[in-house]
Image (cartoon, rainbow, N blue to C red; front, side, top):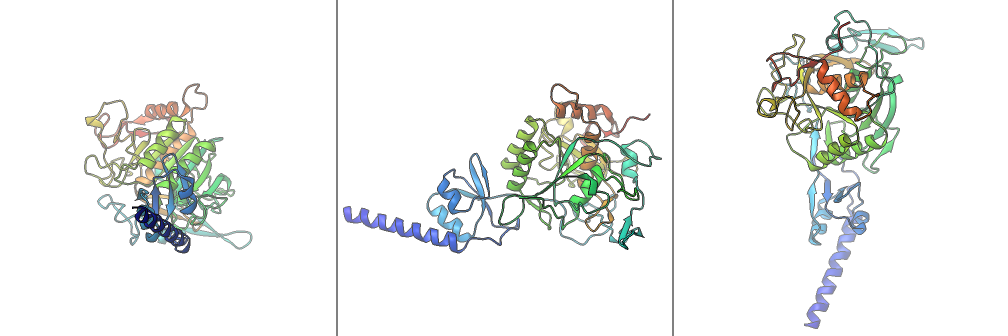
Length: 426
């Protein structure tokens, strides 16, 4: 019996040594894609955090990029490990102009031929791309003014764009830089002053919120051109976004004084890391706005995180003010009317054929609820209820309800929620 116990101790020590060899020999430093390699380790022990090179630490465990070897050996010692979920923005498909009958998730409306619409040579011979319209139809609709020449508002308000990064070298976004952080780096969990956008999606979203037409006023206007953009890169160039990076991005947004967070990504899954992070941010006075998804016209097709009651879910309309077929639907009519609950749509705003800034310094047209969400984030920045003595985020959210114009069908509905929020007509 003593001999058997002695051999068991030797065996365990041998396995332990093999584990350490595997961990440090096969560490997956090059694995950073959302297709595999990112895991959540359900352990709070310092040994495992150090051994497996913890990336982000949470109350009930930590995330890490692990090889298959590391996963197998950690499980051999009874450590519970599961893959970290990934959310998605635009798919990797051929980019063509979309119509109301085509889902943006299948054919996103990116039109490179319209970049640039016009080129003006700068003083140093550099190209200055000019949009087809400084105040496109979406801006005219939100401002309730078809003749509007410029926009205003958002001064002193910090809007976090959780996305693929932002090109702050774009003339229309140079003056909008608030913070720039990269949560997707392989070797370091957070890198300050780095948020290069190799996809373009984040730059497009940022432009809808706060583009200021540039110092020469030849560019395009967003909804709130005086707001500061905090570019938190939580999605890679392929549009995949790890849930742990998003969760830490939200936590950082709270600690850095964010007023509003825009999330133009989604998933069908209810992910606990995301749920805990958005609920915590909302409880601490941050207004959260997200794309409802492009899975319509099917009922109850809203994506997470927009499906959480703590998040403003935004659907898309076209220039005729009709909710497009591909915009996801909520469950408003089967829940309590007048109160936003889980899986309810809150608003529907311009999201079809939206022109905005692009990562090459020019402009492109995209369609999707990804484009609708930043219109509401921008409007919230314009009308941020800073004088509220209670909860500024909640008060601002309720003020947007008051600004909403009802669109068909009549009353609160699964298609558009409370309707289309607009700047009051003078």
